[in-house]
Amino acid sequence: MLFRSDRYNYARGFLMRRDFAGAEQALRSFVDTYPDNELSGNAKYWLGETFYVRDDFGTAARTFADGFQRYPKSSKAPDNLLKLGMSLAALDRTADACITLKKLAKEYPKSSASIKQRAKTERTRLKCK
Image (cartoon, rainbow, N blue to C red; front, side):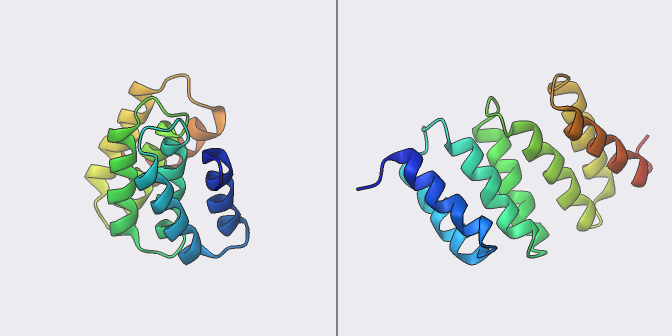
């Protein structure tokens, strides 16, 4: 039997191979099996990515929103909000995207420089007020 971190790495391996359907299955299984594991917040984010890269922005948005709500203290929480905003923008829900991107800046002022810069770029692109 694989240890939890091994199962997480196994699931991430599908992403590295760009097998997004396989990654979706393995990441969903990990989160369902270990919902309270410290890696589940990361796994939920990467699950959202499997939908985002396949242009399934509705499912991506729901997954990123759920990841943020369930794992607000995860290291991937700011990433979840960023990609939620980007998914909403892709769905032509610009006002919701802007609200989400502003929430990111407010709730995670100490997020990484790359997250802050990408959120700023998105807010500018969307002409958020």
